[in-house]
Length: 188
Image 1 (cartoon, rainbow, N blue to C red):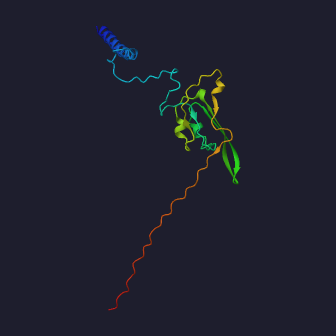
Image 2: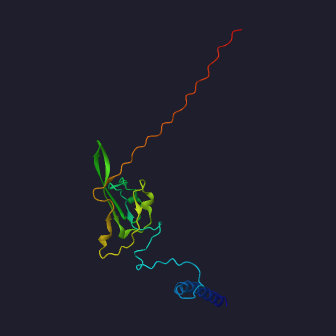
Image 3: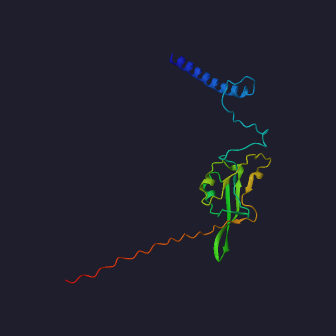
């Protein structure tokens, strides 16, 4: 008897969830019909690809990873490799070389390779970058016939590291406080 009651309970629960889904479907279906003011609420479904020209993605959208460059073709990536270490799939390769700059040997970024075909868009590379050199782009159309087209070099040819100007700490003048004069002991 318990099995029959459990079966009937599951059956009515299934019918209830089916009804909930059908209400949503009906709302979208009858939205543009005359006299269909019964259903309230705004529909947010994008009609892609018909609205490709007016399509706007949300700010929090995680598209492909990009490396922003300024107008002088300079980027912020120091080549530290933290993004490469934190990537769970190995989607990022940071290739560096040692070069002498101002008489000192420094690590310089040669190529920042991003394998979009392996990326899960987890965002660990963007979150852990200490110099904020990586960001998410708005691009999402990545259908290609050749998988090698999904491998991208993020730093542009001829780009250099953007050097931060050293800001001097503002000088704070401390007011000079004169020490109180000690009084001479009085002779009695």
